[in-house]
Image 1: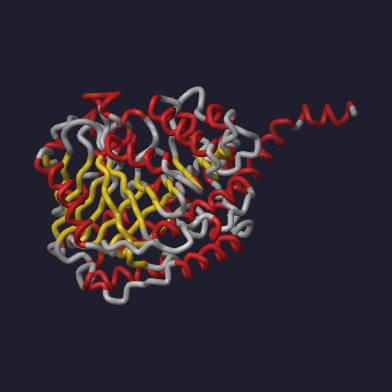
Image 2 (image 1 turned 45 degrees about the vertical axis):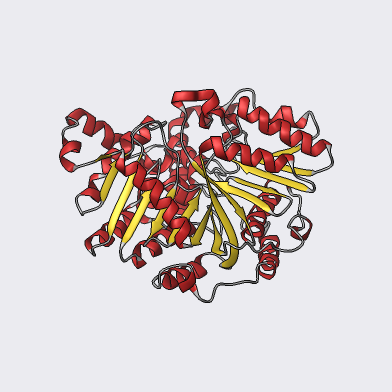
Length: 484
């Protein structure tokens, strides 16, 4: 024993060096075998090789996609088949809904998401928490059979208490209730809302993205989806979390803005498929879709053509990214985008700038006031790439706007939870809905036009006037954009 100790003491430097080499080389090999983005691979290889021990540990925590593809693959495939049967109404004549060029976009989306494009939907915009929260609470209060709720942030504040009380009341009158909250987002308030719900018997679970435990299952990956489905018939989706900052009666002049959406029709069954899949992933409980969806799909007179586009670091990785590229490629007249966190990668920047060079009018609206200052700095570091090629970039006025909207040629819209950044498009689990309908696109265009009318157009000259130190600060923060 003493000789072993003496050996370890004498050669400790050599052993530490050998261990660091083994760890770094092993991590580098794993990176080369698993990473699909060459820039990310090069960056990670540099980190693990030039930061002994720290680099491999950092890669182990945040750099590995540990999503298990096989554990729930058969269940997801079965749910998709059920929803395909349930929403058998497909759109064969898109001319009723959208511009002719959208047929190419539909074909591209067919290869990206396995959900069918279905007609018979109604999608109603809800402007801010003042409209969205009362509509959502009224639906929960009227529930007679089931309520499923999935959200990123569920704050323990006044608005959170209203939702919790409605959910508890629904549960107490015999309604089946399932609540799924992201394990990072739930900690935006302390203490969390979870105990308030669980103490009353409501089944609430966390989507396991927590990196604090030794298991570190899905560090740096968050479930950013927002889904509410009541009685398998009434749905709500979009980008709005459950928190009081969106309600005027509480925050008054400082109220944050957002646009959420109420949906009815066959699209609701698709939202349920996504929830059931995430519920199984997080809890191990299999929910039978037929027991949660309405017995018969309610086909709405509005007859909007729509489908869900789920994305995440699993089999749907980069799904939304691919749909965005396809939308930019088919655009002939206008692309309108509003995003609170606009940090597209070079591929998306190329798609937007190429569209602008083709003569497509590209308008991009970003917040004038951002709730994440570092993101605002990073956006300013790369926005000139769009402006220089003819894209028009506008800074909104007033309070922070969290809306996530896009339209193409006044007839196709993308709504949902995704931001135009690497976190949403590669790391997070997101849910978006593509809608082929001129009426909804017209409403969204009106909202974006209002922002433009009251906003400020950014120019390259204005960006240069920020000063050298501000430009350098922005560029340094921009380097960390994949993890902001």
